[in-house]
Image (cartoon, rainbow, N blue to C red; front, side):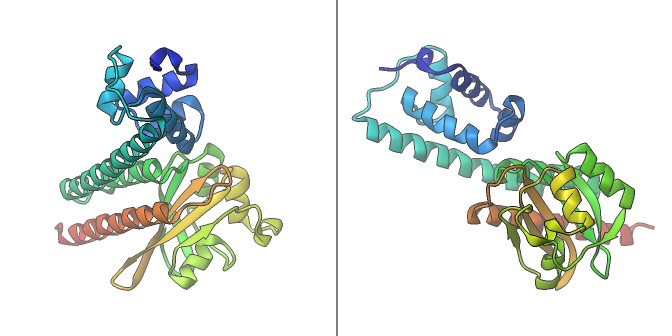
Length: 265
């Protein structure tokens, strides 16, 4: 029977951080790995230690003896189900917390938007995110960012409001009003042109996989919720559905701020 001493040094780091309450994103940032790698390690850790919850994991790390299992396959199933349940609970908690923050923010977007982006990056397994507000004529402003590389942030700050071409992810999203999910921003033909946004995204931001979700209020485009991975790992349908929920919450926050701004004397 395995115990916590049978974990590798990396598995031990991840197990201890996760048991202490750290999220996938926090652990990934500390160890300089992808959040998806954290999950893969956790699945192995749960299977090795034959645990089915974060509480059991903490107990095993503290030296307790596991309850007997019928078979290795049974333990593997339990560990996968346990992680899936914990992820579902984390999603529900995050979405509830974001709505609470929106309700208590009194229209202060500086309180709301960083929280929305933080939860989105964690749950969608992305390295950085940007909330673009739409101006008009395919022009955008990067109003809120999180985790963005400094060079890309500087590029956005220097330009303030900028126009996007039809071939970019933002341009296609603007025209189609649909989610744009790009497998690899460097594999598209526009990367081999002199398009400034694609250059900044790929070369300054180091982005590879990218998704843009339209933010719409009463059939009016108000912005784009964008998430980025710095390796070629396309966003799954589940991740995109989550991103759409966060985009909808961002619209609620923006519209609340607009209405409150009008109501103030």
